[in-house]
Amino acid sequence: MTPSPSRPVPQPRLRPHDVALVAVGGAVGTALRAGLVLAAPPQGVDDVDVAVLAINVAGAFALGLLLGRLALRGPDRGRQRAGRLLVGTGVLGGFTTYSTLALDTAHLLQEGRAGMALAYALGTVLLGAGAALAGIRCGARAHGRRGA
Image (cartoon, rainbow, N blue to C red; front, side, top):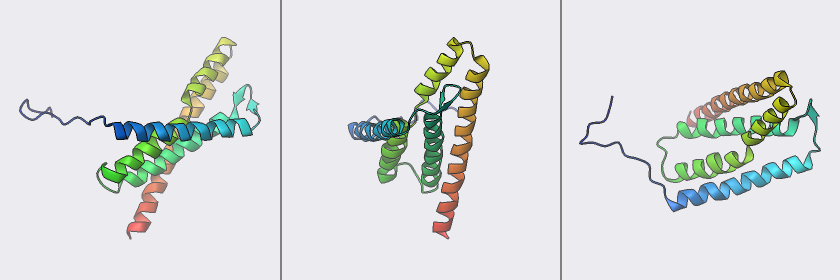
């Protein structure tokens, strides 16, 4: 169904307050990730940093949990929108690091280790998707218990 010319689809507005929420959250999430990576000595299997893999999967679960709970609370506005932007887009966006996934995958490819690169990249994405789905389900269950 396409909108009629007389009724344009409302577009979300970019507000400075929203940008600030994402920026502050992103700084916090990035600092958390950096702290964890620095605190955990590099441990890897075949040159794959396990800490980064764990961070990405944990972040995917946390984002699924957050969005699973928020989706059942109603429209994305007010405090709910602010929380999603601060924690979901900001903190968890800064916490996870798919750019490192891409760089590590490229490094493995440059070394001629295409099988390991594929396993690492695909494995991370599949584990992350599974973790996000588990988070969504946990968030929905927690919301259901609270609402009962």
